[in-house]
Length: 259
Image (cartoon, rainbow, N blue to C red; front, side, top):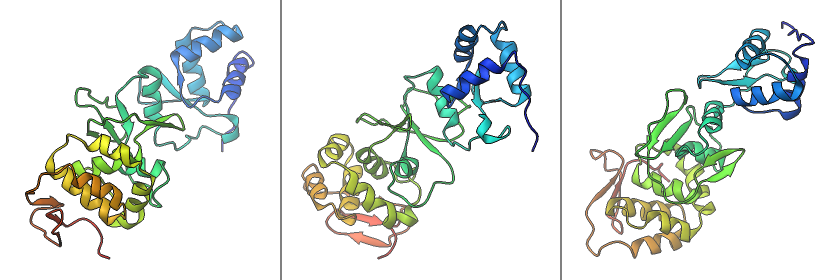
């Protein structure tokens, strides 16, 4: 392990960073700290020196760095899978993007299996930058996101509706007996209906089927009231696999684990 040096001229800046403990350091923040501590270096030079000394580590988002505090005893990254999302938020606080699908399930505490790849959702009219190191899925959600650990996260209601509308985008179906009942238990019935209302018949049929499977018959009954009297056949999973048939919802299910 190599000890990082800290010239006295830069010590006030690092001291201020230690006090603030920012998840992401931006050019604007560095300029503010330099002015506050009366360090007479332009921001570009200041950032370059702190990077060279191991106190800042460049991120993929331009003019963004991760701070490596002294507690890490070296130039080690935090391992935060959302560090690039946090950097994006610093530059574009209103970016229409959110932690979604199985990543939202994990962040909300409803799964014991952490996703191998972070998953984000974004609005249809917005293009995610390449700096975001995550799988990005287009989905227009209706309910406000939940702010947790400084991240915009889908609520449980949005997760279950999105899983019904985009089952191919939702991962971890093999462990659905772990996360799906937990997520439905955390969902507010009225919010699920608000998120689901006006979506296609296939989405509603899958949603009703999932709700019943997860033990939320109250949600299943309300979803059923939104459906037409005569239902088309709907598939949950590949069309060439018909593992289980639900007569009530006219759904062929090839995704949920056997019970």
